[in-house]
Length: 271
Figure 1: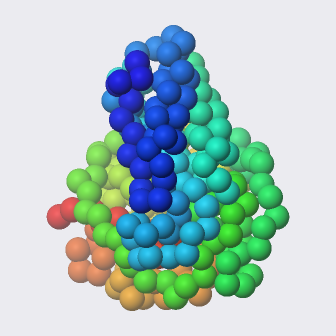
Figure 2: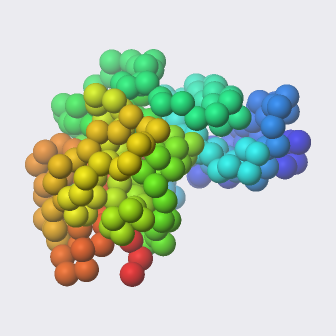
């Protein structure tokens, strides 16, 4: 099983740690009562040289992607050091595999996590619940810098129900997931927020889905049409962790989100 785990580490992390990570993750899946394939582990220091934008190092980010009984999953954790990051990653992978094989159930909100009261780099910064989720869970400092888009991704959006989108969001450890709702033929998102933990928003306002299995609340308004500069300004002014908006003209959905290095990422629906 060890040779089936691919490990990628950023500059500054030893190959010895890569071998430890490979063995640790292989041990987690070795006794699983499921078919686990395509195991890929990535470990890097947040803002390390060789990672985007050259930010100061504030912690360790570890991620594992896999297929469990044919279903894609992802676990992403941040921590102050390599050992703790690997502990969190192994625990998270074990829990995610159990959840996927046992059948989906709504995740609690807010998520109960271990945190430590550490100051934010460069000043007060964002409230904990508005930083990237893994950074907030670990209680890590968060780089304070002027917000700007440092990564762009165009995606062919999957047409699926809001229920299916919410389950994908949970399996992939996302806080927001962009998709196309076939019932309304509009781009939409599900995202993690109170009071139920799941909320649905569309580019065009519409009624609630029919008999959803997920405890969704519904945004009553369509997504605002904003330019990229306007979206960045709104996210920064409101100290939001992410922002769903529509592209002027096309009306296609977009998601602006905060990255671990303090920059912003943009996910846009491909035309």
